[in-house]
Image (cartoon, rainbow, N blue to C red):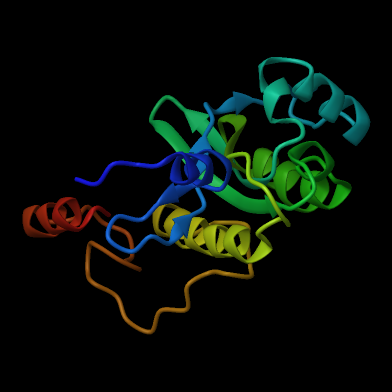
Length: 190
């Protein structure tokens, strides 16, 4: 194992982790806890109030961060993702825009049971220009993962366009998976 010099430590702290054996920098993201979104009955507050209330609480530290976010519904059976988004400016300026609340969140809340939550996947502090291509790449990956969990995902762009399925595993219809299908899903991390 090689010793890490002061220069490499600065790179790791400011830009991300260094990939072993390559020396290339990897942008590192951190995941927040799921933050509950307070509603007025089954309706969202107006954008200003919703944003103000949400970011004045525990989510305050994510207000000015950038990265991706996942809107989901939490039920007694667990949480299910319904929308994945990204921002290069700040979570505060993006997650409660009129387009998000009316075209995505409100429709999801009205047609499904559960408590709405937001989870942030935020970029660690880095120097230089905003890595838009990295955030876009992460968003596409999260959309694919979310779509595998919930085929009713509200995102249209970035959805996988599979022309195949593995019964009980990927792009499958209703019905419980068999023991073999369940074991394969577990093996492959589905």
